Image (cartoon, rainbow, N blue to C red; front, side):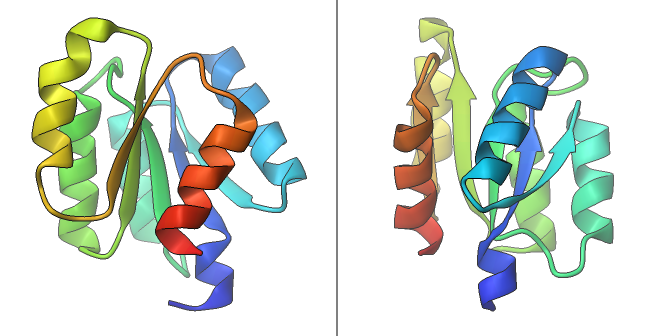
Length: 127
């Protein structure tokens, strides 16, 4: 995985304000961000990206699909993709446990989380 790819991140968040703020914070931290508002946009953006992002940060609750379904679909395109699922709902615990059990580079962060916490997870997954 090239250095350029490790700095490229796909952010999938249906909350427009949250997506905008997090995109700006991550860019200020030196990452290139491809932002998508739903699962369909995320899959299209990931497929078109060259190089492909090394990590995807995905809200578990999107308007058009479950974030874990989107993560699975993205991994079909690139099994090396690191995934960080995020959610503010404690009822997501079963979905999170199932998603984390896939044996791949997968993490979960509960909202609200701090920028440094997210950056630490990104660096732990992709360097």
